[in-house]
Length: 358
Ligand SMILES: Nc1ncnc2c1ncn2[C@@H]1O[C@H](COP(=O)(O)OP(=O)(O)OP(=O)(O)O)[C@@H](O)[C@H]1O
Image 1 (tube, rainbow, N blue to C red):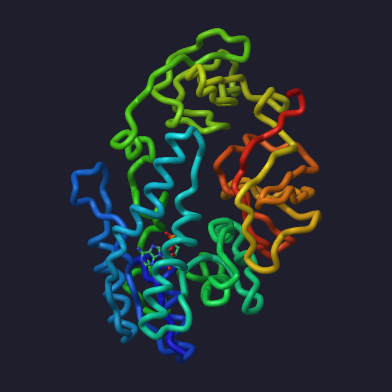
Image 2: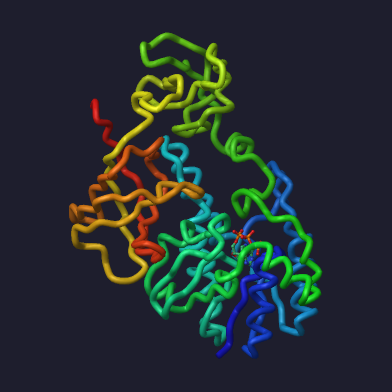
């Protein structure tokens, strides 16, 4: 079986490829060129360095390597979604879309045409069987949240060779294999933006639209630079200083009609910040369709525990989600990953959040 290893030049995908080679598979490496910095768009994108690193590892492993240019598709499928989302006042998740649309979408089409039977990535996730994704063993690194919108046929051809490892074990293995990326720093942030702050990136595409920052009583507390630059639950970067030690102002609402950003002092029962109920749209399942009412665990963002919830389908790819406990800053546009214990059931997009008082 020919396996295409998606190699980003990072240590995780280097080890993923190495593990497959060691197991005797017929492996080729590929780097997806999604976004480069040649149009004077802000930001340092270390793609040249990443390609050099990925290529060096492929050479060490003695496997073929090539770069595939998917920049046009990336613009259409990920950047457009990202910018339209922010312009509409929601918080999109380009990393989730990158997996569904690019790595296991466009790249998979390319791979299939070139005779490959599977795509392997360096995600911290595991496959239980052909159709089931489990959380990665390392709780600090688990990346199944980003795989939540994958389709069953994508799950079937995906391989995650490092999901059984803890990060320190992975580093040890990289050293053992003598990989040139063994000590490379972990990458951060959205794959194409690299080290750039999302705010700076957005500024080059979406004009500022200043307006008032108000508190819950409607008092003006400051000025914001455009609602799209802020996310619900955000504590820093809004410039409203708190008079209370160790209690920060937090963004609790955006009001597009009046262009107001609403902040409140954060505590355990800050109005608008906590909610138990939300509606979801674009429900997607990694296996069996999610058409029945059921209990599950719903993870509202990356690096956030999944909470117990009742999932009630409403038809048309929508559902109501009712958490057992109030959740902080559920955010329209964000992906909600759905689990049954360790098993990733699928995902959906937060549509609207229902506050107890409203
Ligand atoms: N430009 C790319 N070309 C090929 N594969 C990629 C690319 N970007 C990401 N991937 C694949 O997707 C996986 C997850 O991407 P992510 O950006 O989250 O990297 P990561 O977890 O930091 O892993 P790594 O250490 O391999 O960079 C990578 O391990 C790799 O298999």
